[in-house]
Image (tube, rainbow, N blue to C red; front, side, top):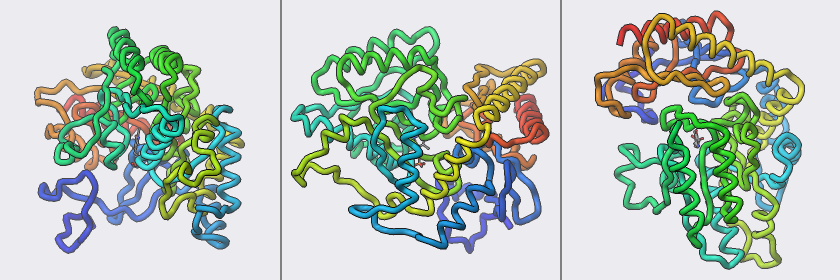
Amino acid sequence: MTHPDPASPVWHPFTQHGLGEPIPLVERAEGALLHTADGKAVIDAISSWWVTTHGHCHPRIMAAIAGQAQRLDQMIFAGWTHEPAETLAAGLRAIMPESLTRVFFSDSGSTSVEVALKMALGYWHARGEARHRVVVMEHSYHGDTIGAMSVGARGVFNRPYEPLLFDVARIPFPAAGAEQATLDALEAFCREPDTAALILEPLVLGAGGMLMYAPEVLASMHEICAAHGVLFIADEVMTGWGRTGTLLACEQAGVVPDILCLSKGLTGGAVPLAVTMASEPVFEAHWSTDRARMFFHSSSYTANPIACAAANANLAIWREEPVIDRIADLAARQAAWLEKLASFCHFDNARQCGTIAALDLKTSGEGGYLDTLAPRLMAFFRERGVLLRPLGNTVYVMPPYCITDEQLADVWNTVGEAVISF
Ligand SMILES: *Cc1c(COP(=O)(O)O)cnc(C)c1O
């Protein structure tokens, strides 16, 4: 069964129902495959929108969820605690940079960003300094809630809400050869006495079109912020958990942020959960015997025990299995396919960072999100049993780390077919 089924009341995200495009019904998933109700297997080449790391229905994560569901389902987290959250916070402390001493739970990437922004502004408020300006990078994406949209790129996605979005300072994307302009702009903003924080996606701007920049630029940006006491917020919601070849993308630049946002792969992509990790000074700024200075943030499902159990299973997989080797192996296979493709068809801007490989189709269209190329490509891939979701004319492959050679070959051969056909 596929929609559009006029009887379905479901309003899908980022979907124009007026176009009546088919919406396949998926029944189960395993590894890199989604199985549809009409008996087809679809290769999930974008990790179900960047969340699935080790593969769908990973046995260890599923067992952890099932086990936790027998013991404790959900409970208030303000003033109470539970073992899965304590274990997870300790596990994150052990695997993440040492100076990120505090773990604040929420439930999605967007909320982890909202929390990060509130922590940064709370930090300056507590210190009695009027710093409210947030510096962001052009083409960034940080989520779809109002605060997250405010610090993200403006465009057709958020035009109706634009009057409500707060002002930010924007630095240009550090395109190869133009890095200095980015650093100069950042330096100028950091000199302003009202600049509170910089938020960015380290190494890869995902929704902005899989735009990549060098670790050296990331390191320089961090240096500039540190020199001016401006808080450095790393949104590793997409780049974290090995996507870029290392556990965190920041690692490749030797950068430790003041505040770190994690979600997507935190539970291996099985259930929703997010954390915002903060350095001790950020926590201390909120520490007081005065109730008026506490961190005023919570959501109902903060640190949901079942989600925490899934994340603990993910951490155990990272500790006990050769995840980094699998990622290096996938990165090498991705590089080989990009090279192979280049030998028989033409495209622009082949690029790769760890397990993420992207290329741009030469297009006669206008480009941009509303160009009809992306949905036509999506349909082309869907008909061939491959789940890909191009961004404008950018096709990227970001599979779960368990994808087999055969499955990856199917994906890239289909991409090659598309490059030739469109
Ligand atoms: C996906 C994403 C978010 C938003 O996460 P949600 O869980 O969809 O709210 C934020 N930042 C980045 C970099 C992302 O890729």
